[in-house]
Length: 195
Image (cartoon, rainbow, N blue to C red; front, side, top):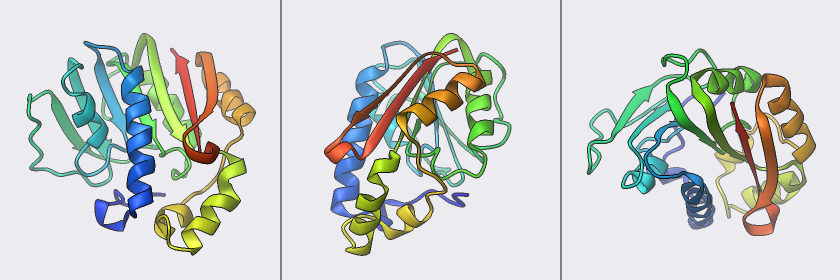
C-alpha cells in the first residue's frame, strides 16, 4: 500500500512530463460544472487545481495532503485518508471520480473500485489511469537507470491488461467501459466507465 503521497521531490523530469500528459488527458475528459473527487490526489491536488476553473467543486483524498492548501477559487477541499477502504463520503456524492496512477499501488483495488462506484452519482463517470502489463519491463528498466522514480515503480503491486481491467470494472458494476492506451510508448492505460 502506498503509505504516503509520492512528493514532487521524488520525481524525475520524465516523471513530471508523464504526469503532466496524464493530467492534461484526464482534464480534457472532465466536463464543466461537475462535482469531482480525485482519489490519490497527491499532496497539493495537482489535477484538481488544473481543472478548478471549470468544475463546480473538487475533493481530493490521499494518505498525506497539504492541510494548509488554499485553492485560488476556493472550490477544492483536501481530505487525508486511505483510498482502498470505505471512503468518507456519502453515496451518490460525485459526478466524476478520478484515480490517476493509483490502482496499481493499492492493496485492495476491488474495494477501491467498489467505493468509487458507491460515491458516484447515477450516470457518473470514473476516470482512471494505470500502467499496462506490457509496460512493466520498460518501467523497471527506466527506474533502474534512474530516469523515473524507483520508489514508485517498486511500489507497484500489480499491472493490468486492457481486458483484465475491463473485466474487474464490469464485475464491480460499471457500465459503458472503455480501456485504451495513451501516452508515451503505451506506458498508460486510461479506463472510463459509468455508474
